Length: 226
Image 1 (cartoon, rainbow, N blue to C red):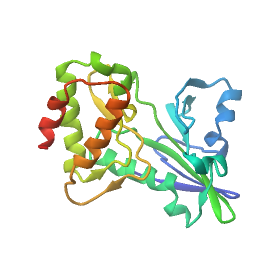
Image 2: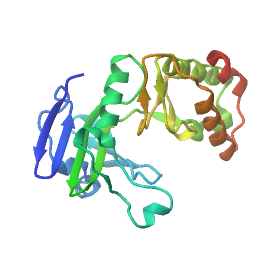
Image 3: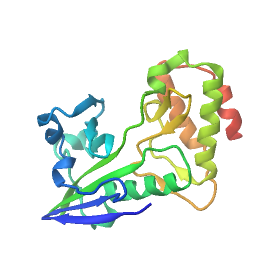
C-alpha cells in the first residue's frame, strides 16, 4: 500500500495518497468533525472513536488514550521513542500489510504522531466498515453458520502470523453480507509463521463470558484446531 508522510509543526502525519489528496492535522481532532456536523456515530470505550464523513468516504477516527489507574494522571500521552515507533504509525502499517494479504481489516487512511517534548499524542483514521454489528451486539442471536464463519476468518489471521493484543467481542464485526472483520490492532504484531491461537481465543471467551454470550463456541474453535 502506498504511503506518504506530511509534517506540520510538531505533528507528523502518515497517510494513503491513493485515497487522500490533501491532509490536515485537524482531521485527527474530534472537535473538527463535531463543529462541521460531520459525525455519523460515536462509539463507546476510552478511545473516543467517531464515525465521520470524510473526503475519503465514511471513516473512523480513534484517539489513543490510556486506561486503568494511570489514565487519572496521564490520559493521552505516551513516551516518545521516535515517530516510526509510535502506536499510530505502527498500527497504520500493520493494517496496510494485513490489507495487502487480503485479510478483512479496515483500510488505514491517516495516522498522526504529535511530539510534545519527551512524550507524544496519537490518533488513527481508518475506513468505516459498515453497515456492521459487533459480536457483542449480535450476542446469542448469531446463527450456527455465523459462529463457524467466525472461526474460519480467525484461522486465516492466525495462519498468517497475526497476533491481536485485545481480541474481544467488540473487535469482531459482521457486515450485512455475513463477512467478519477484525478491528483495533493497537499493539498487534505480524510474524512470518503461524501463531498459537489459544491465548487469544481464551481472551475472546473471557469477553463472551463478561457479556453473557454463550453461542456455539465449539463451532468457532473447530477451524482453529484447538
